[in-house]
Length: 154
Image (tube, rainbow, N blue to C red):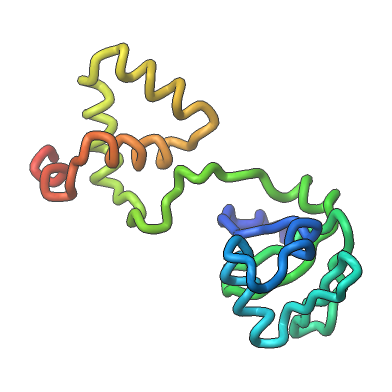
């Protein structure tokens, strides 16, 4: 049987950056700070980090990435595997904005249809490289349309 990996968004950080930050640095990701406090992530002091997983301890070396999986677990990833497996997701996916419903997507498609061509062109310019959901989320923030208004449009 063959399987395709589900597309999920994960957090990932270059080991090189993480190992240069003291734990007191406010820019150190909270997930790394929490893992360090739990003894799961350990700065080794030589530009490497040890990550304790269910499979044992793993060394994250210069050039590697530390990935936070969908269950919150951390694991290291070699740069060539990371580059072949992951692509950057722009920050337009705001975790404070709830996922779009199918109704919202249809409503925003209607909104896009009636917007003037210049606004549509500008959104396309700003949203270069964004997914449709990301563009819709951006538009939702831009025009301030709330779910009740969207529901009324259906």
